[in-house]
Image 1 (cartoon, rainbow, N blue to C red):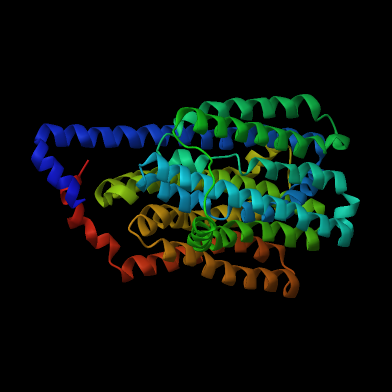
Image 2: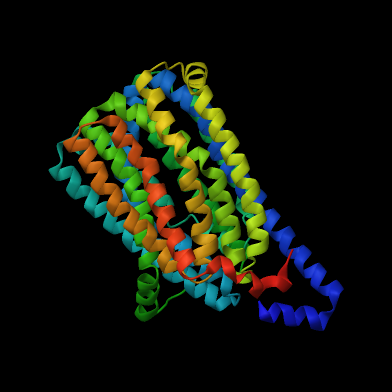
Length: 437
């Protein structure tokens, strides 16, 4: 940032103002591109979920999501935290050759992890009866993993050009929605759901890959084992972060489905999906600001943006709590005290997870403390899993089990606030006083 201030002095006030306007324009461009993508993740579930639950029934809906949660452990392995590690590396490495090296090493590692995932899946089918009984469901579900190495959101976030894949994502989401409307007619059509999702994901990944290769000077080329090993090890803490965050999420569905049955896991899956839709605004802000904060460390502008976001989140939270019964009856044709209580428990504490997301990678990782941003999730997940097992197997209380979902966010928030206070990150505003937007 000192360098930026020097450039401003050399170029004059007008140059500095133009530079900062360009920064703001770039942030807004990526924000609206990510908002479009995340907006689809908000709108399309609100349309597709009532259709799926109404036509399949809550039990089949629960079975689909139980299978998906089991397969998503492999997706975490293949992703290996590159959505965080690679985003930062791409954002700070402007040289095409360096970017091609990062690109190639990550693609190679993902392919190896994909093959490993399929081999492990074959062992599960051989030894676990549930996988054998629902083999076709799991084959269609695990096919979605093929799309993982092709999806390059981490690359487009790193170069801050998310608008390039916003339209392809929009198109495929709409096609998937219409496919569900056309092909899902009753409970016997439940296998079409993972098949449609997998095909759409693979096509979307292919489009993303084609755009990156076609429009940018990144190429897949041979790289040394040392570079691959270095990339693998450097991303390990990010992998632990994603394993802790997303792995604990899927672990909850696995536990509930194993203990409480398909109907309850169906209720929980619905609540969980709405919960993450609620958190989508925080995710958009976090992803938008992460490369920007890595480059500029502009806390002043970030604080202003966060204030507005928190007001929106609180307003939405209060509305959902008071109208939850009406929403479930109107949109999902479901009237269940169990479902309503689950939803209230989860949404009431969601604000803590939202804040944790907002201060994790834009702040901690943006200032160079990515290790602590990652490890906060690891520590939170350990506590979370202990509580989840205790509430599920010892107390056998579904409401305490569900409470673990937002409680995870509360724990991670406290740990992240501790590190922010310890390293006095919020006191570093003076460093960027000449970089106000």
